[in-house]
Amino acid sequence: QVQLVESGGGSVQAGGSLRLSCAASGSIFSINALGWYRQAPGKQREYVAAITTGGRITYTDSVKGRFTISRDNAKNTVYLQMNSLKPEDTAVYYCAARSWSRGIFDSWGQGTQITVSS
Image 1 (cartoon, rainbow, N blue to C red):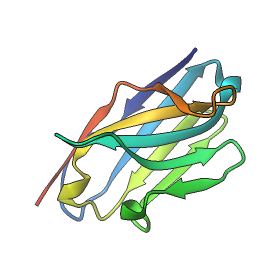
Image 2 (cartoon, rainbow, N blue to C red):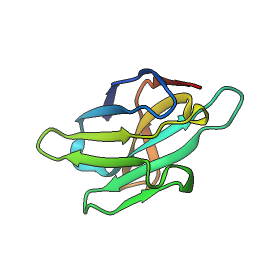
Image 3 (cartoon, rainbow, N blue to C red):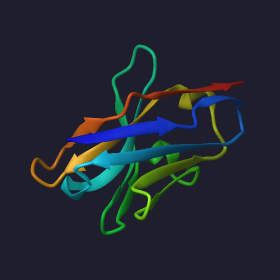
Image 4 (cartoon, rainbow, N blue to C red):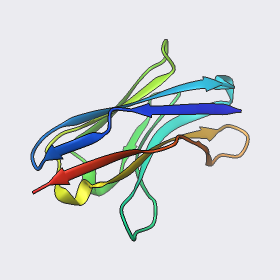
């Protein structure tokens, strides 16, 4: 079992910045990647970014150059630095963990709201 707790959500004007944090606990050894997803009102949950235990990073195209994912292995924490925020970034952001055994993101945090006003 993996527990994920997000923090750092809030409201910001377009062009502003926010940083999300996600602390993982429990069966840390079972995780091979930590990532972020988001879900806007009326839309499906979408992938944002992820970082593997080996440090490989991927982003969805819409956030490249604006968002940066990083991790602190000593703290079992992953971060998402979000710069140049746009109103279309408004969503609930979820931290997720991908397990070695299943190869999918199968552990989820509770979600944190990000609202970007124009």
